[in-house]
Image 1 (cartoon, rainbow, N blue to C red):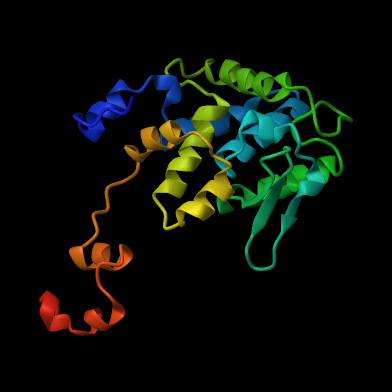
Image 2 (tube, rainbow, N blue to C red; image 1 turned 60 degrees about the horizontal axis):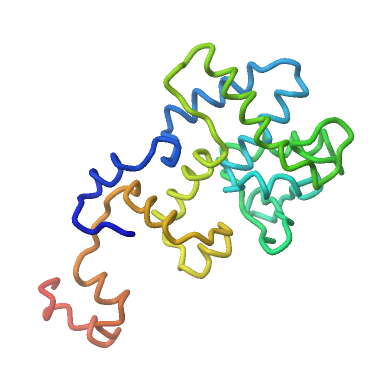
Length: 222
């Protein structure tokens, strides 16, 4: 049940830690840990898991179906990854800070799975992505005992960025593959506050027409 008598800060505090989006400090520490994992093949797989979740909003089920050939460059629109999980197919742009690394990882595996063991093609076993997250948790725990790394927390950090953006709801749902409305409601409280001016809200909700907006004096904006 949605609680409406709490402030955003209270709702954030009430959310279990495992359901919160990772902070940028946590993300940075986790990425450093991913690069420190040995052997190199495991580091590559963990890095791919990390990027697909934090850089493109994939969950573990999405990752099972991604081969290297599903990563591509789309003109001037950067790096994109095609998720092919049945019923959740979508193509998503990758955050620019991770795009070159994901391209490198994709070239390395080519037609094989980005997160699977050597030689595996998608779909890989259900347990595979979670095992990579556990390996990353074990590595970061060597230097940080206060950071919980899960695919869902990485993904939620990406989701918050999309919620805070200007995506129409239809595009948000298509891009994210998100189906659980309560999960979205929980994450809204982590979005940065950016209150709109009354005139902006009025225009977005259709309360005023463009013709009315011409009369700036009416709104005290002349």
